[in-house]
Image 1 (tube, helix red, strand yellow):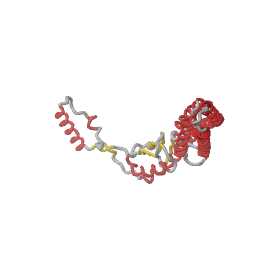
Image 2: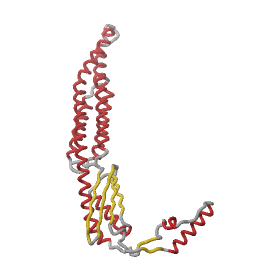
Image 3: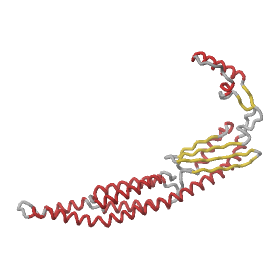
Length: 292
């Protein structure tokens, strides 16, 4: 079953009086890129969270956010670094004078500097918090994967419909191609009727040229390969795992065969069919970009 690369999931847990909320969001991406946002006091767990999520995701840009309801650290007070505040204030006033900017330095300006106001108690045991984080992540990942699978089912239905449309177009091309060869040979024969009466024209040489030209416009091999690629595409949709990269490769091969059919067909009907096939294939390409 295929999964979409876009999804969202949230989960929460309540352990030791701490309510932990985990959220996952993902968008399309060529590789697996996981960004983690944690409370500052739990920054040491970032690698653990990333590895945990990576076990369940193979492609896409994933954003993981975890927060706790007791604040960033669970502290009951704050500590203000007055000396650092004085230095910030002096530096801002000095900068104001050098730039010739009017107005005074406000408390809001100084308080915006990092590290000026910090919790009194920043000591948090990451191991204790991990239990609650993991429980929230399990729930978030379950909802996250359910949404991706749900979107994947819709994508799969659309892709199968479009591949079937390409196969139908291919059958029309295969039905037209033999007639095209016959028509081409007859037209060449008609054009050379007058020349065949000339002594200097070798009928056998003319027949050989007609055969060569007929071979050049024969698209049988391309049709066979295109059908094989379509079959492989369908099989990839049924396979386990993440078929996104394989599907992208098959689309490239299918596009190559369709272009070759168009260049060799040399026929209005076949050209119209090729355009229709390329339109369907482009829609397939757009949808495959969403598959994990």
